View (cartoon, rainbow, N blue to C red):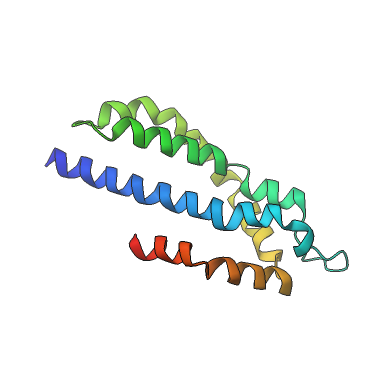
Length: 135
């Protein structure tokens, strides 16, 4: 029974880390790298650097935590002692949750046609589709 819980946690962690990596690689980084082409000075719904920094400021910390945690539990029979060692990292999620409404509000304002087309194009990326379908 313990091994099945460990397996479920390990599988869940692998899946979640892949999702975080996909969002960073196919959404966050491309938005950040293409902000000038997505911005329209006359549109109040345009994306700006401050909004991007707020919306994604926890992302690298989340990725680092989950990558490190996954590496630590990969070959262990009993995960609970390791989980206990990493429990303080849940503060990342406390911080993220405290700003979640603000982040959602930022996303809700990104309604420009340029941005919508950009996101549609990113979501149609063949590599991303393969990753989603294989999970």
